[in-house]
Length: 246
Ligand code: ADP
Ligand code: MG
Image (cartoon, rainbow, N blue to C red; front, side, top):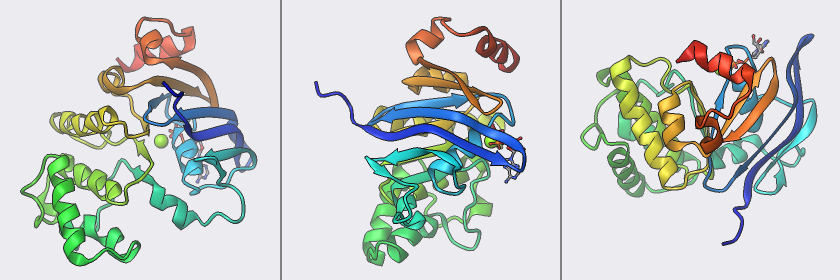
């Protein structure tokens, strides 16, 4: 078997906010088809790391390669890059005046020039994939939080991204809705969607993660295969963190 190509290579990146050093020489590779779960205390730099990958934050040192291209090069247009990198946030951020289907259809139609008919067919297929096939005409405020988050995932998938970034996608949800969102994400991982998932849902990590990365104070302290990690082969610092969240 051919070794999987790296989709993403983060090499020694640096980031400050004011005089706070929030990313310290952070490196991370994600191979095609892999799911990496990123864990760590609040304020450790997880969101900032994801935002740098999506060019929502500039880096000050190091490099980021996405599909062998240096994305911090000045020739890279952020909005083009974001067509290939889907991002899902804690708070869904759906357009409230559009239905579920319209939220999904918007970018394919306006950015890719897909016809309304094709965009609608795509939206219906994606709503099926995220297991809410009957919600096409519902507005966000008519949907539960778990359903809204699944629409947000479908909206990101509509651009056929090569990498998905999830930033605590279930942390704003009531407990009974967490599972339905994690199930959809686990389906995507099983189908080979390359993903980085910031989450403290260790059940999901056990099910879906090829690698677990632990961050603390802006540093990647630990990078383990799921197998090693869940066999208890973790550093004392990571274990202390796990003891707090579990
Ligand atoms: P995490 O997602 O792990 O909780 P963040 O990446 O959000 O951590 O934040 C890392 C650190 O950077 C925190 O101390 C946070 O307060 C700070 N920070 C994040 N974004 C900004 C910003 N836009 N301006 C100033 N400080 C920020
Ligand atoms: Mg965060």
